[in-house]
Image (cartoon, rainbow, N blue to C red):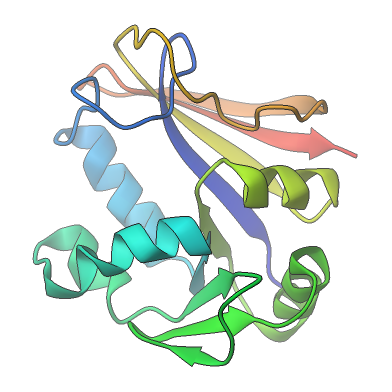
Amino acid sequence: MGRLVSNTSMTVDGLCDVGAWFVAEGDHDRAGVEQLSTAAAFVTGRKCYDGFLGFWPTATGPWAEVLNPMPKYVASRTLNGHLDWNARAIEGDAVEGIRRLKDEIEGDLFLSGCGELACGLLEGGVIDQVNLWIHPSIGGAGTRPFEGSTLGLELLGVTGYDSGVVLQSYRPLT
């Protein structure tokens, strides 16, 4: 049985709209690629998928080398069946779809995004671990991860990187 691991990059004050604050290179970046390379599949919502589809299939480098060939599952109310970029739409309800995937796939499912899909999966009890990659910057106004969700978390670990990024890992208390 697989696990669903949510990954979100954010500022110290919780902004997750990627901008100039995002530290793209450093030891945390290598750790992120390493983490992704252990995943069996990549999960995202349609909005993130559309954005990724416009960039990653032609990208090169360590992230692209791991992400591009990886199977991808997209939660969407409008997409169906097989999709571009080695992707497939999750049929029906996203929470039930993820439960099925966790039963079918051996290994971790890597969830990217922290909006509507992540909130629904968190509230549905299918996210097994929440990783917050906190970048050394104050972002100001903007989107916050898991906005509108309320749930306790148990700290699993904290890792600081020379780049200034801190990874906080949690287990949702459901």
